[in-house]
Length: 276
Image 1 (cartoon, rainbow, N blue to C red):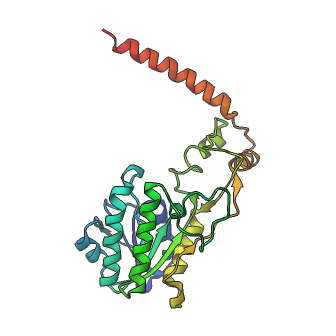
Image 2 (image 1 turned 60 degrees about the vertical axis):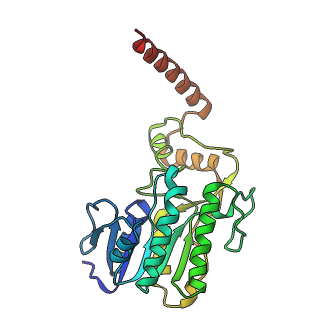
Image 3 (image 1 turned 90 degrees about the horizontal axis):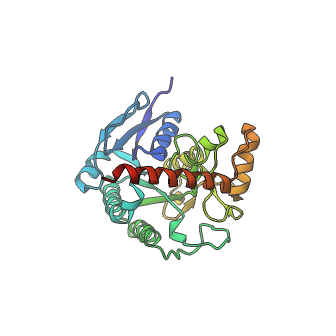
């Protein structure tokens, strides 16, 4: 039986990352509050759950009251991120300052922009040109400025594309693993021969928990890269999936051809049905 003691750790967001971080903190015997906009089901024993929309400053402050550390793992649908994430980030940042809590932010690699195959380190300049990348880079600067001016204590942790239990919306998620298990086409986006980095979600959660529980203040005020395996090609990952399961996926060109034929017939039938 896990006992919870000591300082309060508040996790914002009940997606795969937030939920896995809660599990990691509970496994360490820490006192945890889990906050989400909608009700949280099946929370681990001993975890306090709070329903709150933390894009509202007042609700963010109230939901994180008493926290020693806040973990910002809130996410929104991709098409809403440029519109919604800055407001959420500012509200959570202000809440951390008002509650005198350390703020651990789960971040992405988007602020760096295109790497053109070069290795990305914590010292790589933020050179994003996309709208989402610039938004993330501006938020990062807000976090670090708040730390520099003493308004909050910040520890951003950046991860690559997730994979692992609970992860569906990822290039190594629902478009890959079911195909590996059934022998159906496994989709690969872009040039599948180029190396790409992935972060195993339980490793990400452990990294966030380490940042949130580190006693040294040197853990704050700078960007950290969370544990990520060396980059490999998508082709190599597909080969590993085949080796592990013993099932050979349909070649992508064959699968796409069959799918295009199916959609062609489907749309033709739909058009015929809609005709008077």
